[in-house]
Image (cartoon, rainbow, N blue to C red; front, side, top):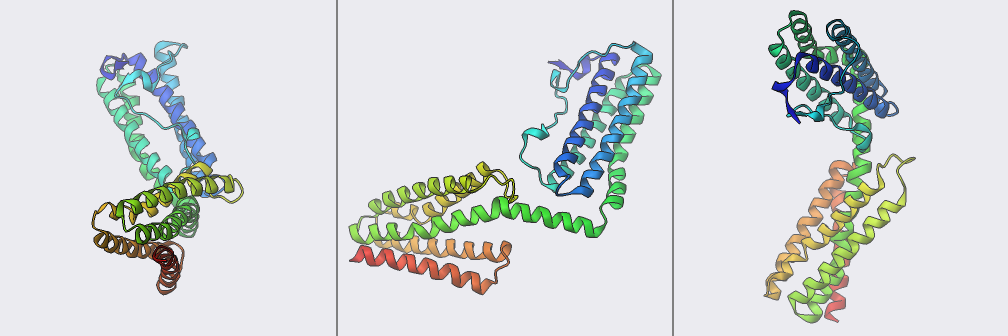
Length: 318
Protein backbone atom coordinates (compact mmCIF):
# COMPACT_ATOMS: atom_id res chain seq x y z
CA UNK A 1 0.00 0.00 0.00
CA UNK A 2 1.08 3.57 -0.68
CA UNK A 3 0.44 6.70 1.31
CA UNK A 4 -1.96 9.24 -0.14
CA UNK A 5 0.80 11.86 0.01
CA UNK A 6 2.89 9.79 -2.44
CA UNK A 7 0.33 9.84 -5.25
CA UNK A 8 0.91 11.97 -8.32
CA UNK A 9 -1.81 14.18 -9.82
CA UNK A 10 -2.37 11.56 -12.52
CA UNK A 11 -2.84 8.86 -9.88
CA UNK A 12 -5.12 11.07 -7.79
CA UNK A 13 -7.39 11.68 -10.79
CA UNK A 14 -7.41 7.96 -11.62
CA UNK A 15 -8.31 7.19 -8.02
CA UNK A 16 -11.07 9.81 -8.02
CA UNK A 17 -12.55 8.36 -11.21
CA UNK A 18 -12.68 4.89 -9.68
CA UNK A 19 -14.16 6.28 -6.46
CA UNK A 20 -16.98 8.08 -8.24
CA UNK A 21 -17.79 4.98 -10.26
CA UNK A 22 -17.79 2.81 -7.15
CA UNK A 23 -19.91 5.24 -5.14
CA UNK A 24 -22.43 5.45 -7.97
CA UNK A 25 -22.71 1.68 -8.10
CA UNK A 26 -23.12 1.54 -4.32
CA UNK A 27 -26.00 3.99 -4.55
CA UNK A 28 -27.59 1.91 -7.31
CA UNK A 29 -27.13 -1.25 -5.22
CA UNK A 30 -28.83 0.46 -2.31
CA UNK A 31 -31.65 1.64 -4.55
CA UNK A 32 -32.19 -1.91 -5.77
CA UNK A 33 -32.22 -3.27 -2.21
CA UNK A 34 -34.77 -0.62 -1.20
CA UNK A 35 -36.92 -0.80 -4.31
CA UNK A 36 -39.63 -3.13 -2.99
CA UNK A 37 -40.06 -1.79 0.54
CA UNK A 38 -38.93 1.85 0.18
CA UNK A 39 -39.56 2.98 -3.41
CA UNK A 40 -39.36 6.70 -2.59
CA UNK A 41 -35.96 6.36 -0.90
CA UNK A 42 -34.83 4.16 -3.79
CA UNK A 43 -35.52 7.10 -6.12
CA UNK A 44 -33.33 9.33 -3.96
CA UNK A 45 -30.38 6.97 -4.27
CA UNK A 46 -30.90 6.69 -8.03
CA UNK A 47 -30.66 10.48 -8.25
CA UNK A 48 -27.50 10.44 -6.13
CA UNK A 49 -26.02 7.78 -8.42
CA UNK A 50 -26.74 10.05 -11.39
CA UNK A 51 -24.85 12.87 -9.65
CA UNK A 52 -21.85 10.60 -9.08
CA UNK A 53 -21.96 9.67 -12.79
CA UNK A 54 -21.77 13.35 -13.72
CA UNK A 55 -18.77 13.83 -11.42
CA UNK A 56 -17.09 10.85 -13.04
CA UNK A 57 -17.70 12.32 -16.51
CA UNK A 58 -16.06 15.60 -15.49
CA UNK A 59 -13.05 13.77 -14.09
CA UNK A 60 -12.74 11.64 -17.22
CA UNK A 61 -12.78 14.68 -19.49
CA UNK A 62 -10.04 16.37 -17.51
CA UNK A 63 -7.96 13.20 -17.25
CA UNK A 64 -8.18 12.63 -21.02
CA UNK A 65 -7.11 16.21 -21.63
CA UNK A 66 -4.12 16.01 -19.28
CA UNK A 67 -2.91 12.41 -19.44
CA UNK A 68 -4.47 10.62 -22.42
CA UNK A 69 -6.72 7.59 -22.74
CA UNK A 70 -5.15 5.06 -20.40
CA UNK A 71 -6.35 5.16 -16.79
CA UNK A 72 -4.29 3.06 -14.33
CA UNK A 73 -6.27 0.82 -12.00
CA UNK A 74 -5.84 2.42 -8.58
CA UNK A 75 -8.28 1.25 -5.93
CA UNK A 76 -9.15 2.42 -2.44
CA UNK A 77 -7.57 -0.64 -0.88
CA UNK A 78 -4.28 0.25 -2.58
CA UNK A 79 -3.95 3.54 -0.66
CA UNK A 80 -3.16 3.53 3.05
CA UNK A 81 -5.71 5.27 5.24
CA UNK A 82 -8.10 5.84 2.37
CA UNK A 83 -11.89 5.76 2.71
CA UNK A 84 -13.51 2.34 2.54
CA UNK A 85 -16.99 1.37 1.39
CA UNK A 86 -19.07 -1.64 2.43
CA UNK A 87 -20.02 -4.31 -0.10
CA UNK A 88 -23.77 -3.82 -0.10
CA UNK A 89 -24.51 -7.13 -1.82
CA UNK A 90 -22.75 -9.05 0.98
CA UNK A 91 -24.70 -7.39 3.78
CA UNK A 92 -28.09 -8.46 5.15
CA UNK A 93 -30.95 -6.32 3.94
CA UNK A 94 -30.06 -2.88 5.35
CA UNK A 95 -32.50 -0.78 7.32
CA UNK A 96 -33.64 2.54 5.91
CA UNK A 97 -31.85 4.47 8.68
CA UNK A 98 -28.62 2.53 8.06
CA UNK A 99 -28.48 3.44 4.36
CA UNK A 100 -29.32 7.08 5.04
CA UNK A 101 -26.47 7.23 7.55
CA UNK A 102 -24.20 5.44 5.07
CA UNK A 103 -24.94 8.04 2.39
CA UNK A 104 -24.08 10.88 4.79
CA UNK A 105 -20.77 9.26 5.78
CA UNK A 106 -19.86 8.59 2.13
CA UNK A 107 -20.42 12.23 1.20
CA UNK A 108 -18.38 13.50 4.15
CA UNK A 109 -15.48 11.14 3.44
CA UNK A 110 -15.43 11.94 -0.27
CA UNK A 111 -15.46 15.65 0.47
CA UNK A 112 -12.39 15.27 2.71
CA UNK A 113 -10.63 13.33 -0.06
CA UNK A 114 -11.25 16.07 -2.63
CA UNK A 115 -10.14 18.78 -0.20
CA UNK A 116 -6.85 17.00 0.45
CA UNK A 117 -6.35 16.23 -3.23
CA UNK A 118 -7.04 19.83 -4.28
CA UNK A 119 -4.59 21.13 -1.70
CA UNK A 120 -1.82 18.97 -3.19
CA UNK A 121 -2.57 19.69 -6.87
CA UNK A 122 -0.24 22.12 -8.67
CA UNK A 123 -2.05 22.14 -12.00
CA UNK A 124 -4.62 24.93 -11.97
CA UNK A 125 -7.34 23.08 -13.90
CA UNK A 126 -6.95 19.92 -11.78
CA UNK A 127 -7.00 21.93 -8.58
CA UNK A 128 -10.11 23.80 -9.72
CA UNK A 129 -12.03 20.64 -10.61
CA UNK A 130 -11.10 18.89 -7.37
CA UNK A 131 -12.14 21.94 -5.39
CA UNK A 132 -15.41 22.15 -7.29
CA UNK A 133 -16.10 18.48 -6.60
CA UNK A 134 -15.34 19.03 -2.91
CA UNK A 135 -17.90 21.82 -2.90
CA UNK A 136 -20.36 19.57 -4.73
CA UNK A 137 -19.93 16.85 -2.12
CA UNK A 138 -20.45 19.43 0.62
CA UNK A 139 -23.71 20.38 -1.08
CA UNK A 140 -24.79 16.75 -1.41
CA UNK A 141 -26.40 16.81 2.00
CA UNK A 142 -28.47 19.82 0.92
CA UNK A 143 -29.29 18.07 -2.37
CA UNK A 144 -30.32 14.95 -0.49
CA UNK A 145 -32.64 17.07 1.63
CA UNK A 146 -34.17 18.54 -1.54
CA UNK A 147 -34.57 15.10 -3.04
CA UNK A 148 -36.11 13.90 0.22
CA UNK A 149 -38.57 16.77 0.15
CA UNK A 150 -39.50 15.85 -3.42
CA UNK A 151 -39.63 12.08 -3.03
CA UNK A 152 -40.29 11.72 0.69
CA UNK A 153 -43.17 13.89 1.85
CA UNK A 154 -44.12 13.41 5.46
CA UNK A 155 -46.75 10.74 4.81
CA UNK A 156 -44.38 8.62 2.70
CA UNK A 157 -41.55 8.94 5.22
CA UNK A 158 -43.92 7.82 7.99
CA UNK A 159 -44.98 4.86 5.87
CA UNK A 160 -41.34 3.88 5.25
CA UNK A 161 -40.51 4.27 8.94
CA UNK A 162 -43.46 2.02 9.79
CA UNK A 163 -42.19 -0.55 7.30
CA UNK A 164 -38.73 -0.37 8.87
CA UNK A 165 -40.22 -0.82 12.34
CA UNK A 166 -42.25 -3.81 11.14
CA UNK A 167 -39.17 -5.46 9.64
CA UNK A 168 -37.19 -4.86 12.82
CA UNK A 169 -40.02 -6.44 14.77
CA UNK A 170 -40.17 -9.50 12.52
CA UNK A 171 -36.42 -10.02 12.28
CA UNK A 172 -35.25 -9.26 15.81
CA UNK A 173 -37.90 -8.43 18.41
CA UNK A 174 -40.26 -11.36 17.81
CA UNK A 175 -37.60 -14.11 17.63
CA UNK A 176 -35.71 -12.55 20.54
CA UNK A 177 -38.86 -12.30 22.65
CA UNK A 178 -39.84 -15.87 21.82
CA UNK A 179 -36.40 -17.07 22.89
CA UNK A 180 -36.39 -15.01 26.08
CA UNK A 181 -39.84 -16.26 27.07
CA UNK A 182 -38.95 -19.87 26.38
CA UNK A 183 -35.64 -19.68 28.20
CA UNK A 184 -37.02 -17.79 31.18
CA UNK A 185 -40.17 -19.86 31.63
CA UNK A 186 -39.49 -23.38 30.38
CA UNK A 187 -36.30 -23.81 32.44
CA UNK A 188 -37.98 -22.86 35.72
CA UNK A 189 -39.42 -26.31 36.33
CA UNK A 190 -36.22 -28.40 35.99
CA UNK A 191 -34.08 -25.90 37.93
CA UNK A 192 -36.35 -25.56 40.94
CA UNK A 193 -37.27 -29.24 40.85
CA UNK A 194 -33.57 -30.09 41.09
CA UNK A 195 -33.04 -27.55 43.87
CA UNK A 196 -35.90 -28.81 46.04
CA UNK A 197 -35.21 -32.50 45.41
CA UNK A 198 -31.43 -32.53 45.92
CA UNK A 199 -31.07 -29.55 48.32
CA UNK A 200 -27.77 -29.00 46.50
CA UNK A 201 -27.43 -25.60 44.76
CA UNK A 202 -24.66 -26.77 42.43
CA UNK A 203 -26.76 -29.69 41.20
CA UNK A 204 -29.52 -27.23 40.39
CA UNK A 205 -26.95 -25.09 38.56
CA UNK A 206 -25.83 -28.03 36.42
CA UNK A 207 -29.43 -28.91 35.54
CA UNK A 208 -30.26 -25.27 34.78
CA UNK A 209 -27.19 -24.71 32.62
CA UNK A 210 -27.86 -27.87 30.62
CA UNK A 211 -31.52 -26.93 30.20
CA UNK A 212 -30.68 -23.36 29.12
CA UNK A 213 -28.04 -24.35 26.56
CA UNK A 214 -30.11 -27.25 25.26
CA UNK A 215 -33.18 -25.05 24.92
CA UNK A 216 -31.11 -22.38 23.15
CA UNK A 217 -29.81 -24.85 20.57
CA UNK A 218 -33.26 -26.36 20.05
CA UNK A 219 -35.05 -23.01 19.74
CA UNK A 220 -32.35 -21.61 17.47
CA UNK A 221 -32.62 -24.48 15.01
CA UNK A 222 -36.41 -24.44 15.17
CA UNK A 223 -36.55 -20.73 14.33
CA UNK A 224 -33.95 -20.95 11.56
CA UNK A 225 -35.75 -23.85 9.90
CA UNK A 226 -39.24 -22.40 10.28
CA UNK A 227 -39.04 -20.35 7.05
CA UNK A 228 -36.42 -18.66 4.86
CA UNK A 229 -38.02 -15.23 5.17
CA UNK A 230 -38.53 -14.81 1.42
CA UNK A 231 -42.33 -14.58 1.67
CA UNK A 232 -42.90 -13.51 5.26
CA UNK A 233 -40.29 -10.73 5.27
CA UNK A 234 -38.85 -12.10 8.51
CA UNK A 235 -35.27 -11.71 7.34
CA UNK A 236 -32.33 -14.09 7.18
CA UNK A 237 -33.14 -17.40 8.91
CA UNK A 238 -29.62 -17.68 10.33
CA UNK A 239 -29.89 -14.29 12.01
CA UNK A 240 -33.33 -15.10 13.43
CA UNK A 241 -32.11 -18.48 14.63
CA UNK A 242 -29.06 -16.93 16.29
CA UNK A 243 -31.15 -14.24 17.99
CA UNK A 244 -33.64 -16.80 19.26
CA UNK A 245 -30.97 -19.23 20.43
CA UNK A 246 -28.91 -16.63 22.26
CA UNK A 247 -31.93 -15.06 23.98
CA UNK A 248 -33.24 -18.49 24.99
CA UNK A 249 -29.91 -19.39 26.56
CA UNK A 250 -29.65 -16.03 28.34
CA UNK A 251 -33.21 -16.34 29.62
CA UNK A 252 -32.41 -19.72 31.16
CA UNK A 253 -29.00 -18.77 32.53
CA UNK A 254 -30.34 -15.67 34.30
CA UNK A 255 -32.00 -17.60 37.11
CA UNK A 256 -29.47 -20.45 36.90
CA UNK A 257 -26.41 -18.45 37.95
CA UNK A 258 -27.70 -17.72 41.48
CA UNK A 259 -27.36 -21.43 42.26
CA UNK A 260 -23.60 -20.99 42.26
CA UNK A 261 -24.21 -19.54 45.74
CA UNK A 262 -23.41 -22.34 48.24
CA UNK A 263 -26.29 -21.52 50.60
CA UNK A 264 -29.49 -23.05 49.21
CA UNK A 265 -31.91 -20.57 50.81
CA UNK A 266 -29.92 -17.55 49.63
CA UNK A 267 -29.62 -19.07 46.15
CA UNK A 268 -33.38 -19.67 46.00
CA UNK A 269 -34.14 -16.13 47.11
CA UNK A 270 -31.80 -14.55 44.55
CA UNK A 271 -33.10 -16.86 41.80
CA UNK A 272 -36.71 -15.91 42.56
CA UNK A 273 -35.81 -12.20 42.42
CA UNK A 274 -34.09 -12.76 39.06
CA UNK A 275 -37.16 -14.60 37.76
CA UNK A 276 -39.38 -11.67 38.76
CA UNK A 277 -37.03 -9.27 36.93
CA UNK A 278 -37.00 -11.50 33.84
CA UNK A 279 -40.77 -11.71 33.71
CA UNK A 280 -41.01 -7.94 34.19
CA UNK A 281 -38.64 -7.39 31.26
CA UNK A 282 -40.67 -9.74 29.07
CA UNK A 283 -43.87 -7.93 30.00
CA UNK A 284 -42.27 -4.58 29.17
CA UNK A 285 -41.08 -5.80 25.77
CA UNK A 286 -44.54 -7.16 24.95
CA UNK A 287 -46.08 -3.82 25.94
CA UNK A 288 -43.45 -1.72 24.14
CA UNK A 289 -43.17 -3.60 20.86
CA UNK A 290 -46.13 -5.96 20.61
CA UNK A 291 -48.92 -3.45 21.32
CA UNK A 292 -50.09 -5.44 24.35
CA UNK A 293 -51.57 -3.54 27.27
CA UNK A 294 -49.31 -3.47 30.36
CA UNK A 295 -51.85 -5.27 32.56
CA UNK A 296 -52.54 -7.98 30.01
CA UNK A 297 -48.86 -8.51 29.27
CA UNK A 298 -48.02 -8.77 32.95
CA UNK A 299 -50.87 -11.17 33.74
CA UNK A 300 -50.07 -13.45 30.80
CA UNK A 301 -46.37 -13.70 31.56
CA UNK A 302 -46.80 -13.90 35.33
CA UNK A 303 -49.44 -16.62 35.06
CA UNK A 304 -47.29 -18.77 32.79
CA UNK A 305 -44.20 -18.29 34.93
CA UNK A 306 -46.10 -19.03 38.14
CA UNK A 307 -47.55 -22.26 36.76
CA UNK A 308 -44.17 -23.54 35.57
CA UNK A 309 -42.51 -22.50 38.84
CA UNK A 310 -45.18 -24.24 40.88
CA UNK A 311 -44.80 -27.38 38.75
CA UNK A 312 -41.07 -27.48 39.45
CA UNK A 313 -41.54 -26.94 43.18
CA UNK A 314 -44.24 -29.65 43.42
CA UNK A 315 -42.19 -32.19 41.49
CA UNK A 316 -39.02 -31.41 43.46
CA UNK A 317 -40.72 -31.42 46.86
CA UNK A 318 -42.59 -34.62 46.10
